[in-house]
Length: 504
Image (cartoon, rainbow, N blue to C red):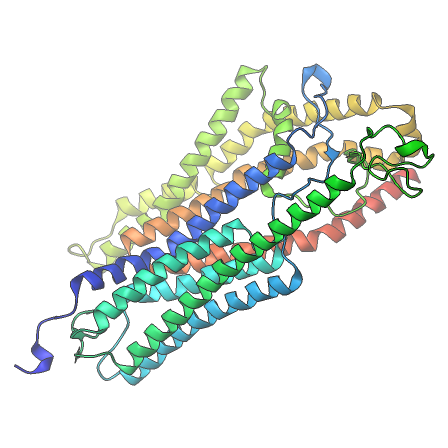
């Protein structure tokens, strides 16, 4: 029997491991990074504000006002930030990981060109693995360069998981390629040419996989080493600071000297190191604030009593109906392309004889009438939201007005009228921001997730890969980053000009 007619003799266990793990690899990495990043952001924000807030103050109607915190430098920071040379080491190792995946992609392309007569193609799962992994590692590298501190625990957990999965994939590749096996073909991963040993392309692929594992283990090892060294250094510095600490309390001068310090034993240049109050909300910060998404989200919870109409049952019904309509819009958004596909199948005669699908077309028109923000559902949601928006604006404006008038005379003498009026007018901006987040951004993210799942189930994983990687990771990251970076200067300039015009 010639080699071309032999049955498929490769290792079925290794083949199954490669097929399923290669598809799950990028999904597991991105989900693990997002979960770890979220948990780290929440715990870091809680640790920063622990026992660091003044007693709660109440505003008009007994509603809580934003709490004023005290700036306090912790003895040991919540996150380790590495020096610039160490960051460069992590960045270059990450570039090495990206380069190894790029090498695998190049091997696949060259092999497809060389083996075009045999119709060779790597298959669906390796394509998802290579393209998805490249985008995930590119995202990790971008966050490592842009964020501070970096790398963080989220990167470490992702690197550890990637190392474990890469080792499993490497073992499965050896188990498959070291025995008699058939190469994959277009449309048939088991019907290619029979190979009894590893080919040059397979040797190159396994070598690049091994190099990638070395880079990942180096990232994990250097992170653990640097954290250990930095923690040991911080403990040594804390011990030396404790040895130099004064035995007197902070409010007493050291050893009778006029300029004594709490920890300086009466030295001339000693200064107490008590907690420093953070600037009030209306004061211009002296440095650019660094806040995580969780801190921003938690800060906006103070406005919930002003937004939720707790005194009006009809407005509460409107509030619930608005979110029900948003859910219905998501269903319509999914049904419109499905119905368009049904019409196309009928006209193409896929499921039977060709006829004019008047019923399907009428149903499609009904879906289109209800679809989008300009459809009937969107218009109904906007009408129902108007009373809630007016209620929120009224409550926020009254609270801000009463709070400003409760401040001391020193505040009013030291502030410009334009700045105060600008601060009072931010109620409508906050309302618009919350509405855009609730009814534009969140539905868009839900639509992206639904599109990925639907295309994966109904059509092919290639479609889901394109939507997930290009739309969600690349476009969303650069689009949001560019809007935020480009909007700050004109917004600040417009605020200053508006304050000057009001003073004139």
